[in-house]
Length: 430
Image 1 (cartoon, rainbow, N blue to C red):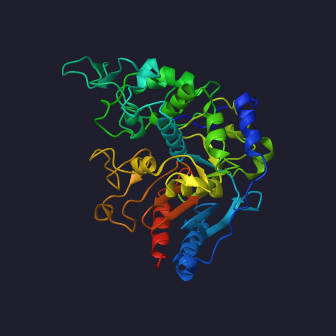
Image 2: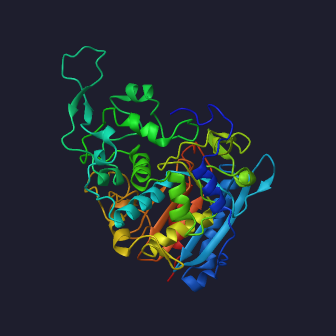
Image 3: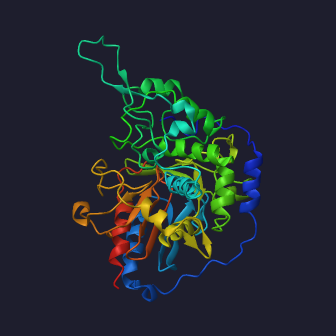
């Protein structure tokens, strides 16, 4: 994966992006609800202090700079708390409204956008992708060369057994990686290797059109592979809706949900709230990216990555998660029906997803078997995380949303996000 700091170009505003900024800087229509006493939502205040102590210990050990925790139950905020510093070098404390790069947590937003179009009758989940993006017609799959092939032959191709369907993209079974696999050299030549798109002086559509001409790394529907699937979905949203992805998100999701600080690229006046990225290597914490040198502020501002391109705050993303927990509605605004949200977090991959939870829905891990998972967690809960280390979960049975926000890459094996889940659940006593 190339460095996200390779180049910094002058900021260019598209009409859609300008519209998004106008929408997201409009006055708040409703004030944020203040946190309630933990006991009012079935939490122990004393047990929540265990979470504080573990985070504070990581800060004391200089394993991360700062963080924001958001926990809500029954739609009431139990904990919205900032820890440590946003900027160590400047001595700036972490505020609760700090803006974070959320990378793969963007996938949930793109999934919601796709399901909104699905509910409007504009697509079916079993539709072939090539119906909307013809570049994916007649896809081929890279496979190992036959025995006796010359050493320089890394792969051969075979026809895909069936077309990629939209549901394959939603469940990461489309045969798309982030460019790794037998045809990796071809992906690198096409500049399609790794998840980072913020520095690109091209549209997401231009990148995905190139992707459609490359070999897949798996047969559609046959294996779970994490990769460009959600970026393809983002381009699909543009094709089907006739709107750029930034504009669709701003007008159809962020503005209705009052997510005022969520966007692909920051307006300059918000630059001071963008948390620097720190990295932890061999026990040493160093700054990796600041707002003074960030593609999210100074970059081309043209490539809207539905897979990993968004910025958000704990409160904004908490509202988005609450909408999902509520079955698609928040504060009188309905984006999806309860049945559609339910479909999103059932297991769509059978036994193909072999990470901790052993089940995967439309953009999330799904916890079906707590015994298989082997740690504290709620049956039927679902969630995902970010390359920058944030993590979230939604637990429908416990009516719980939990979100941990920070900026740490690499992490040197730090296990704090796993402990965050455990410490959240152990604090629930009713």
